[in-house]
Image (cartoon, rainbow, N blue to C red; front, side, top):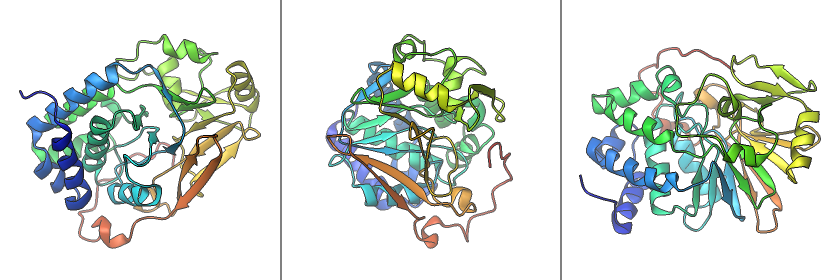
Length: 321
């Protein structure tokens, strides 16, 4: 198999996805299976060198769940600006539920390969084998490529994604939330992350936990992770010298929500989630002084999604809708 892509080859892949993508069929036309394997191998080598908690420097744009809504991802880049002119931190959940998971993850992984210092991708609870077999990514790979090999290449890659990020040592960015097993960020750095997301334990908690109005730790209604109260957030932020936590993982109708006396910000970046929830999406822009600006946006025009001509997807379990 050929080695790493050149910058020129990656530029063409990224350009083709931005300009030619039609959803579903485009991903196979741009990168057939053997080239997906080559791209994933290249990005594995990049990710393997990154810490469990990836250090990110501002200015940066922080993005929540994308969930396979490819044309809304393109809209997001129109609003925030395209790489490499802007730095991005994506907080996971690139696949599942939306119609175009392959196009979303292919674009983001290609951008990571081309601009490894300007694109940060962390892991969400959907970046695993079990969840993607239920919520759409596996079925999409099978339909587009005729085999599960592309799904396997990507899910193997997902094991390499960092567990969280930290912006300028001041803003902690997991996908889900905190864990009773992790008092300090250095504890996260010591975990063995190169595994399938476990059903319990600290890695699971980082992917699945949610902030809550009740104090202390609670049992999560999701069946994985915990709920954590304002007291937990304040202690964690104080002990780790943080300004606040920014996370994704939850549908928010306005696209963003502050909780715990502005100690936690939730971002959700998939507008009109599942093409039926009617929510806005949001991203957060941080300048070099960590001054923040939250930008809300609506779905891309409906005709771009191809929804009218798309066969109705099978009903999926709604574990948090």
